[in-house]
Image (cartoon, rainbow, N blue to C red; front, top):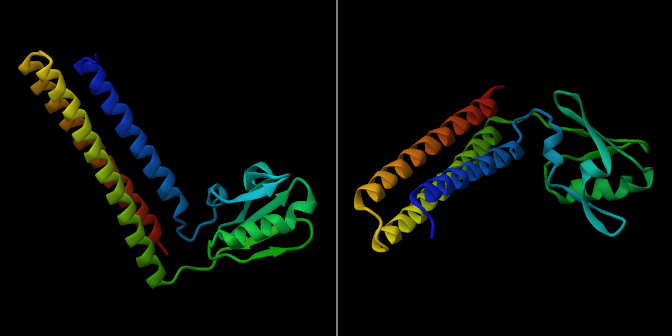
Length: 186
């Protein structure tokens, strides 16, 4: 049977994971700057296995708006090009037979506003996930109360869960604000 400290540790850990997921999702939203992480979720068919591009090629930043992808084996260039096109990143790969260049288009004001809207939706999903974790952990604490745990200990633990929740929601706001600033900076 879990103790109040087990439940509090579980809440901290789960909310931290929700924050890490938010950071990863925000990292996928490009703000006009080229980063190798933009291709992390793009997979190619590498000898019959879906493989991230980063494991089949070297992805590097040539300049602020250009990525280069140099496959370890040149026969994989067409597969990498196709995977990038299919990933719907809004980038057209240019192949010179040795490497693939990806030039990011400059962002229009409307596109920036759309990206900010997407960022806010992603942050709201993280807030909801954190609140759901709070509810789940409070339910576990209430179950402890029914099983004979002292009411004072459970109330104190519920207050701590709320404090942990507030801290993580504040971190979500901080991440959101930083990403909005990055997107809107021309």
